[in-house]
Length: 528
Image (spheres, rainbow, N blue to C red):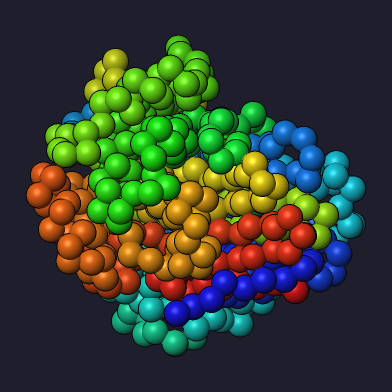
């Protein structure tokens, strides 16, 4: 059994151990959690390139030692050329190719805003070149291909190999790179070096932006130079849930942070502390169905929302939803939103500053397009838009798409502080609920709460069905009870990436930091 790691001065948890070490090195040099996370974000973009990158989006949840948390929305909007006419004749927005690459990449703007916030918090003056140093070296000199990258490349080779730039970047010798083989990204190393020289803002308003805009036009992407120039990360007041165990925060729209908080708010009314394994899964799944209904009714670009999303997390509406859940029967439901390849990472420093962070391309390898001369894989987050008129998610130039991404954090009533999260599309809020319930309510050790068998209601990672998928390590009695309740149960491998890569860090009352990572990933919990 893997044990959680503990340390007194700093802790980083990521799904790739090299990213954890990049963050830890910055903490050792006196950097704060925000600076360390930028270093980890750059490294993870290089070493887990099928799941995230500079061409994607990011979201930050920052919990200071005292005072209110701060959220950073680093997601991009649809390009000015992404009109309904641009998709004339298409039944829906494609998931791959130029027409899928329709939103501005926001992740680098998030790095920039995070460093601005770090300076406001009197962070050590660490130059950008220091923070991106590991990422540049790994891109230039190469990294060992993970089993996750090798499997994703093999699975998607026939789908993506004809997309511009994909084969030359990800299948450089004509064959899928084997696990453990050296994988270099020289163009990406050069791009990262340019950012160090000209600043992160040059991604949107500089020579790099000019180059990307020319390539986008040549490829037929509906993003123009002015669209890049308009991109700014935005600070938000995060959504808040008053839970019996403390305060829990998550990301605002256009993300599904509402779902993660609503699940915990509903189940907080169902005596989860004494629930059996089967009843724990059943109640969280039933709460998930109600929370997904809220999401599908309300969540879109915040400028297009006409209700107070925070008010949906008040006591009365949560009471009403909890009253709908029956312990003797599973409710029917529709369909999920599908897959999402993402990385969640957490960092805490010695001052008490904590960061919960997510960075994503949406589907594995995003749109599949790698911009020539840059090594940047562009996301396909815009596939979440609808081409139906008058739909909540109807495409419009300048509109933010719906996001599954939602980093979580909590301050428990006993003084502990927790950051946690997961990748996995529809699975993110379900995994968050599993982790918080197991650790915060049922007294399960932190690492066990993450390693223990998990589940997924819905689709992700190429799954075609909306069944309740359970890792096969879960007890046969639990499987039988869930089927008896009416759940359409499918079994996954013992440790399956389908249920995501999760992680968590807890600051205990004595100041000690505890980190736990997901054995389904290549990650680590690194502290000092």
